[in-house]
Image (cartoon, rainbow, N blue to C red; front, side, top):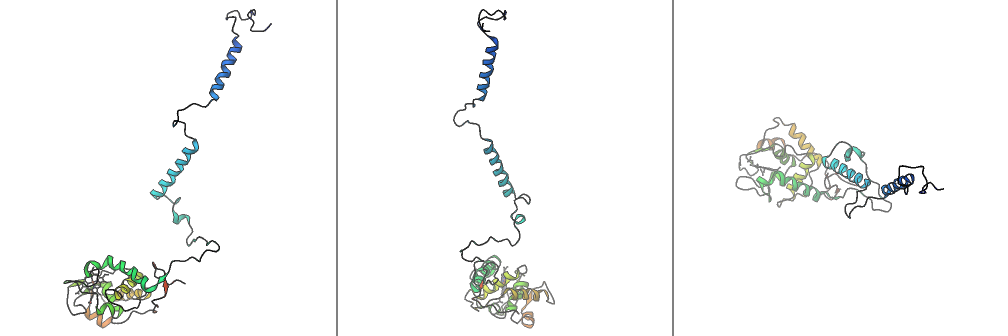
Length: 255
Ligand code: HEC
């Protein structure tokens, strides 16, 4: 006799047609089956994969760190060894800083420095005006380089090269680095109709900076008298062939 037979009288309090043990088992297995089913969601409302959330978090972390420039983790300089250069793939043309002939390279860099420091008074065309002397055709610009450099580094208290007195020029070039001064002077000597064709090298500009510091009265404007008495010479240093290939930003020769 089966246990769910209506005749079974071992479960006196229950409806005789239901086998409670079996019914419980069925409910339990159906519940488990339902739980195993994926939750049904409308299109576009499916739950997002955990990996997507993790990847988005990483992207935000890195972007935030890069934008906020946080710490050494993402700092290029801290991570990359100094002087690190990527190897050249076999068969590729040899790499190196793009080179340019010295004279045009010095002039191009010098023009930027002139625009930033001198334009306002001497004009983009270098011709000055009623209150500023012309650098076009100025004998102090195209003549002995130490004279010119002393005016740029220390300023000038009139008279000027033409004998005309415009008052005072401040020490506009006092903060220039040697390569900036070199580029600026080379530009002025080869622009506005001036064409000495030579280069005031970084070495020569450094000599100018040193000579400027060594003046008897450093920090004061030079005068025509001092220029003629003490600085009427070419700046010392090796001459650079205007066709030498140089790095256009550092102005140093490249092989
Ligand atoms: C704020 C205006 C001003 C700026 C900027 C300025 N200068 Fe002058 N510069 C003058 C004045 C004014 C004189 C004449 C001073 C005098 O009569 O003593 C002068 C004179 C000169 C002279 C002498 C010219 C000659 O033939 O006697 C040179 C060279 C010169 N400046 C170069 C430069 C250069 C290069 C720069 C940029 C680095 C520059 N100046 C920036 C006002 C300026």
